[in-house]
Image (cartoon, rainbow, N blue to C red; front, top):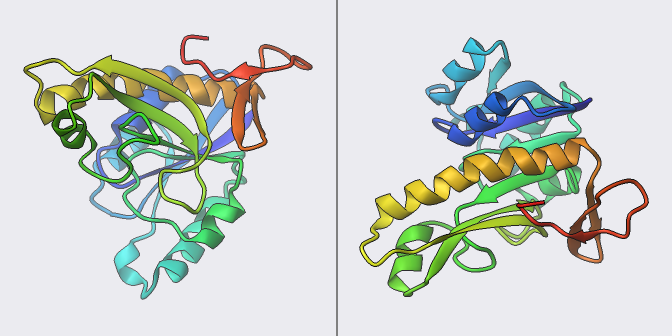
Length: 211
């Protein structure tokens, strides 16, 4: 059984999807937020999950906040830390501490459109496809090794809201699936790329959200 800690800043809709998925081999030990008013904390408590708040406004630097957050996370001995709408840039020391066991989901087909306003930028660029990416977290923002991606068409009448809604539906499907792969020891990070093994000893194939 893999211990999972989820970090949120707001509603945490991806956290909700992960909890509802009841992923085999994964136990959600805690949900942590950097805001006491994060709506997702109520959902977690209602589902019997322990919650903690580490308010970034109480710390005078990113490093001191990250140290306090890490201390709280490590109390749950996590095998995997999951960022689910956690709106803080993490320090290099923090990401190194969880290297190979921290995942994020980003609402674009990385490496395109790192950062914010991804749906607006995809529409403005004339993209025919948009989507989401699950990746391991490294010190460079939105540049960690890609685990899996899901794509949706960009329709002629799309605006940010309509495109975001279709991408979010794919996020809610893809993220629990990838966490299931992690829980089943199917993910292998090798030579800067992530592979999904069908079984122990397999050669491995590139991660595919339909696998």
